[in-house]
Length: 154
Length: 106
Image (cartoon, rainbow over all chains, first blue to last red; front, side, top):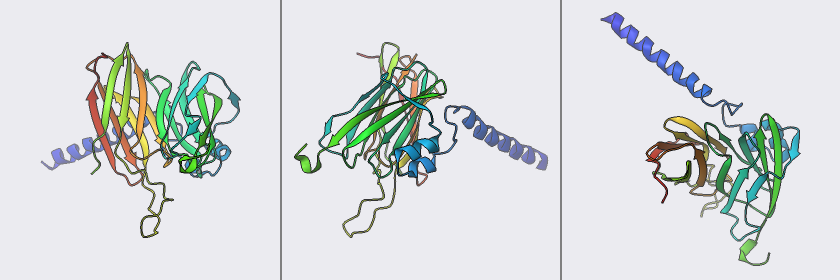
């Protein structure tokens, strides 16, 4: 009876291990397994990009960033990003004038289209920089968003 | 316990258009409450989207995402009746998963 109990515990442990490794294997797009604290706490877009390993970034016209030219409410600014670069696996967003510019990365696999819609907070008028990764290379595009404070001006 | 997400997954051709609304305060850690005390950071950090149990979309995000976040993404090769689930986890370890069935487009 003790033996059965032991083997059950063993089997459970093996399953847990498998689940942990399986999770890591399912997610090959993200090199840094955990949420990249260093990049998220960087105070400039350049430092954040460095922390993420986004080097040798090329300008590209194939990244479509749809965001309002003038945002009336900086607390909710809708952004639609489409990368038309074939084989795009990841899109990262940086709001350059925000206190912590790195806003997030989006990874696509198994048929997901290189498109994302998100809504962000923008503290003051700022360039919104997008970096797309395709085939190990990085491409970037920028869109300026003006934020009107107090609902007037602009 | 976190409130349920609203997920809508609709087919357009063979591409599923997925829109998700999450209920979350997304505190930046910079806002002060009525008493003048800083409201601590409280925000969603990771999001995972799965089609029939296979991960298709993952996101790591910061507190700069707006309150009650809305995300949309698209998955090619999906069929009506496929299961689409979304999971988020925040910086306090709270998490939530919801699942919907993909509907044929109208």
